[in-house]
Image (cartoon, rainbow, N blue to C red; front, side):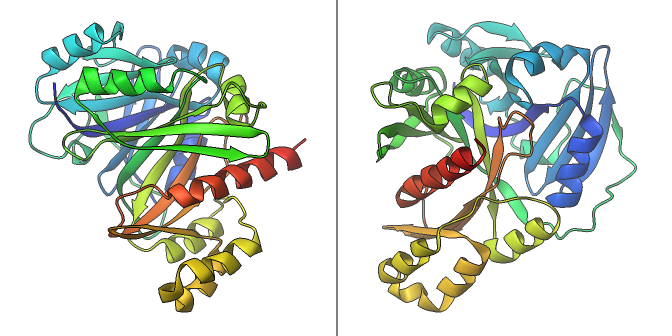
Length: 341
């Protein structure tokens, strides 16, 4: 039942061409192929080993009405598809049939996992099976390819369900728990659990509000999304500062970081003092663990219902997820939420 990789993530949107253009022109993805099916049409975009399928059409309307634009499928490659499907069903998932007629199971909310065989070749470099793909004429973007891979996916769940979902990924797909974090900000609080596949190539950060605290940003996401869903996708980059400057110049809006954060950073990272002014200028966050340090920054959502945003992350040895920055992210999103009132 071992899961090996994420083959692709599929994003449902009302305007396929506009969303594909955003990934191309703002984030440097290449448009690889197009597919037209009976009730939907899709564009496949690729950068590094990350594949994003952008889909619109009547087959997506119910999802869009309920949840807004966001991730509807996280396709996983497995050593044995049948065994993985049976394990997921035994752990509580329901079987569904994906568009590709491939086995699939429910994951959380209305998001599903299409299950595909692991062939040994990285699935992020081949066309997803089951659709009639036609090569695209090419990409309109001239951006440098900054994104190397999909680092992790953050999933927002309802309060009180975090442990059950972590258990599901352990029982269904052989994931293990890496870490847990509890963050309290004022009268609000959130829990998180990080789970990862045995291959080390599929990582989910599961987050949920503390139902015993005041409603906050995660409760707001759950309301806008009408339940659990993918909160953000993290893209691994080799050098985050030039990537942020380039993406920002191409139209990506990032969350702001308070200036005082960098004054404290100077105390925490004496060995990075030469770089801290560059981090301050780019508004990039930094954290470290026993293996090294990481740099990260979060975008604002480009979607009307504010249902999905993106992260850029640079790893310099670190295997963590910026636990010291979870509070900074929470506070940054909270400032945006309050400013929008």
